[in-house]
Image (spheres, rainbow, N blue to C red):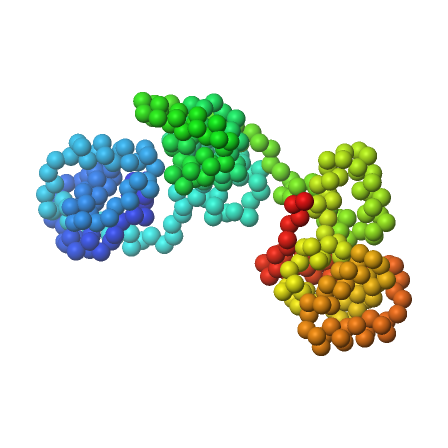
Length: 360
């Protein structure tokens, strides 16, 4: 099948073609693939079929429209031949692939490296037939926002005009008031911008995005340091934080916000989620954590918070076990409290609990 026929097969309602096809007359003339595609589209449009032709690449849409403009009458024998041939070819299709690099990358997401994906996107963007706005439309608003903020008002106006309305509205809402008003006004001046200029603007924006290096780590630095300090001994944690405050007070403050240890449980966990947490922790480990926390001021508050927000029967049993446990070594206590925090993090990752974010 030709490129036009393959693309058309993805959007063709086949039943209407079956109703038209019959034994072709041998006198039917041979046609070019593009002519056959035009005949199929004309037939379906005449029968009232829904044809999402806009989903085809723009160069195919243009070629199809040009071909339809060149054609005149088609006899019944030729029509039957084209429809029959098209249905025969559809019957032979066993597997279809997504059109374009973006479709292929979406299908292969998680199976190829980020650097390989970026290289393929750059190659696709360099193609004369590629539409850069397909790539830009697929990006999140977080990736697009820096462009709208930093580019000229005119470029930002073109971008908002070309993007889908919901995404453009979201981007406009994230701009400062004065910038948003200037960009919105500039949209009114984009009426005479020619398509080639819009395409060049799209290519330039894609090129800027592709120059951004791939991040090796998904999370922010303060989150990674905080995650390490969460399970570090308290003395090590405080020493590191004091050192960070000397080196970079702003970063140290961000790390402190990212840290979540046993003492933070009352501020970060909803009371209704406590039963989920205690069920996930082994009973001996939970008893050790509560016994270790009970001997300290801030940790003791967190331990009492846990005991008060579980069933009365379980709470009473744990209090008795804690009393019988006696003094706990510092190392054992810290490991047990870290296990409680690990359980909370696991529940958060599974979407079963939601941590309260400290914005103070």
